Image (tube, rainbow, N blue to C red; front, side):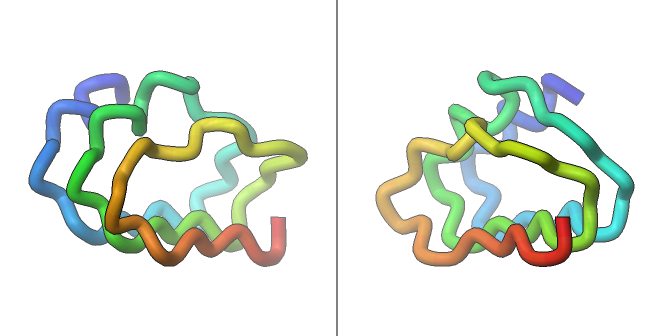
Length: 64
């Protein structure tokens, strides 16, 4: 949901194994405290919704 972007203090987000094929580009934009984003085992063919988080050091997109 687009309200996910309101969670500005969120550090770790796992949305793995949900059969997602896309995420709205602005949905993750405001997650400025994010350190880890786990999106493995979904159905992404491309992913352009990278959050603008200075401390983000892990994005897992395996098995998509």
